[in-house]
Length: 438
Image (cartoon, rainbow, N blue to C red; front, side, top):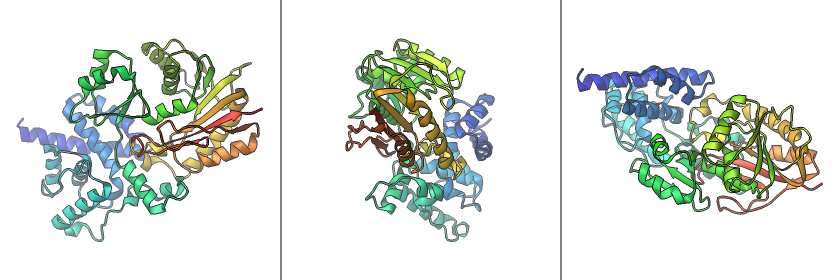
């Protein structure tokens, strides 16, 4: 098979997988799950092919709001344009996809590193000059990159002009944040030397000494093979939430929706493993993984229990602190999971808010007097943040908000913590910290 035949086969396979993954996403399945399943089945693909396909799939969803309006362009062309809107260098496969779609291979230069507005201008210019019949009235707008309902339901800080806020938010959603790791700062330089590169540049955060971020797709398997499991992947926002909890040595904490245990690990790391943590989840499998991660990180041991916090709680126990990292609509992760914006339903924030209020009502009785209750969600909707907090405080007069510093070094909080996706950059998150007064 000639090199041109290989490129042609790669181009066809990329479009096939975009089609397959999009069908799964529109049925409600996350793109990464659908893509991983497809890639596992196709052992013919090498590492370079897999990277190109993965980047094309996620770029397709990131720029879908613009490119789905270009239905007179073939899917081949739209996939190539999506790839180039994110890429910092072109690819022979992208050029072949453009040619298959009837466009010149150089019609759009790689746009990685430019602002969304600049990318929109470049796309309009490229397509307007090359194929004007395809684009009657086409003018890329920032707001069309996310569902209209999302910008309506996301909390906007007081005094922030609506258009400026929308521009900042969409700009942040259109840029994949670094892969953030949590590890002792004494190991940062070793890891940078091992896996840092021009394509995977390292960044530190001045306020979170354990946080080390890498752009692109760092080779974490190489790092684990060389250095062991003393680090773990954890977004900067999640590391900040753990610090917002302010656990103290020898306190007892309940991580009520522990999942894979990222915040349990962070709480133990902050206290040098001198924290008594009960980590619970309704899924036994994730707790087994949690125990393994704690052991590999050499953070002592952690008690676990299969508990659905919506209907059960630890018997005869009260805690110095409870963390409720609640299920949510996930709007704050749209920068990292661009497909989620197209499979999240309009009423999802309101439905999740009802569940979140029930969770807080259920667990709050387990906080001892003077103890803390921390509510956290990776979303920014009004319904799941300030409205949940207001409803909880109205129902539970024994609690009040506990003010304190912002863990990322921003303005001090009144007890409500906002982490915006342009900070870091990272996932968008919200947390509220309550203290039990009586």
